[in-house]
Amino acid sequence: MKLKRLDAIEFDRLAALTQLGEAARTMARMVLVEGRPMTRVGALHNTSRQRVSHAVEAIRRVYKDQAIDRGWVSLDLPLPEALSVHLDQFARAFRAAPAGRVREKALTQVVAAVEQATAALRGQ
Image (cartoon, rainbow, N blue to C red; front, side, top):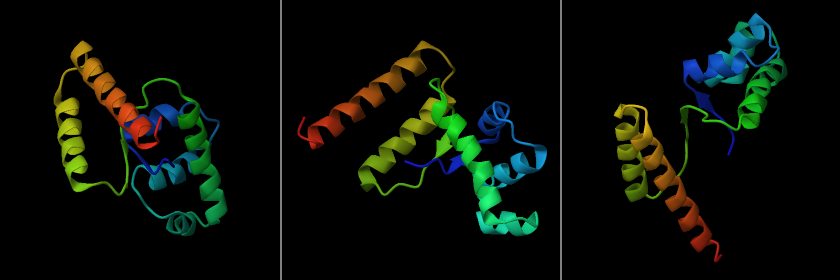
């Protein structure tokens, strides 16, 4: 699964862990936070799509290397409708709940259930 979107706070946290210059950070932000196409961002900055891609990849590498809570991301996944409804309800309730053990336990339960269902589908 390729990282497509980040919220601004998570982007800033990850960008601080890179050696990207201000222009590269701005381009990566436009793609990952604002959702703009790389070709358009390149045109706005008078640079190639490849240079924009390198900036975005620097953020993606740091994201991938992080072993801690990765914050919030947006995904574009084809899902059965019933599952998408429940995941949406869970995400809204999770985000509204105060940080703490209840949230951690709920997330752990959902992750374990998904891992168990995935294993069952794979015949494990």
